[in-house]
Length: 190
Ligand SMILES: CC(C)(COP(=O)(O)OP(=O)(O)OC[C@H]1O[C@@H](n2cnc3c(N)ncnc32)[C@H](O)[C@@H]1OP(=O)(O)O)[C@@H](O)C(=O)NCCC(=O)NCCS
Image (cartoon, rainbow, N blue to C red; front, side, top):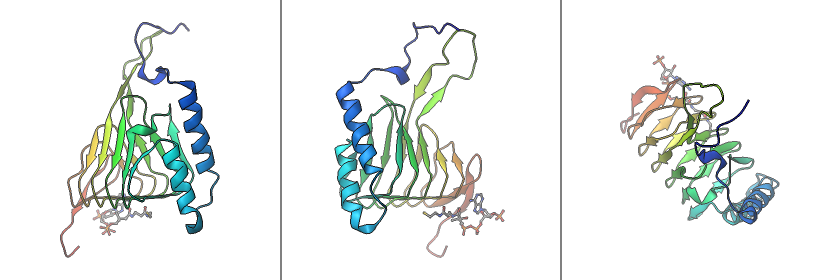
């Protein structure tokens, strides 16, 4: 099958080999450090050296994976963020994920900023569109949730385990299911 080379595919944009190796090396080291409180600082240091944009102290468990390339500078964590094990960030050039302060991310959560074209044409690439994901302050995302491109999750919202979030989520609401729908509004009493 011949793939058309005319259409630029953001997933295959070249990046410097040195940068690529640096990011891969520090992510490899990060993923070697145990998830024990004694090693939180060491994981944090490797995360920064891998190029993640971090403001304040954050706690991230291994393993973490990023794909398809290494644009870690477009992944931003604010202080007090906790990310449990197995998070995956799919953030090519032009994509971004930002997670505001005091947000909790459960195990196995996927942040996906890439969509491919829906229509198949023999011999042509599906191409790709790249988006942004914005998670506000004080959000809790349950295990194995998937956050899709161009989604913003409002302050204090909760995403139930296993949800696939395709649309923006209002502040102080709980959403769940596939696709995620509002389960409840949070009040002081709930
Ligand atoms: C969403 C969650 C927080 C429960 O919130 P809650 O407000 O106490 O929910 P309730 O148990 O009262 O259920 C409310 C409704 O949401 C539904 N619901 C609860 N969890 C759901 C889920 N994961 N997916 C889809 N629907 C869910 C319930 O079935 C119920 O529906 P109904 O009203 O039609 O019966 C919890 O179910 C959850 O998903 N926790 C995540 C746990 C986790 O990932 N921990 C990792 C540690 S970081």
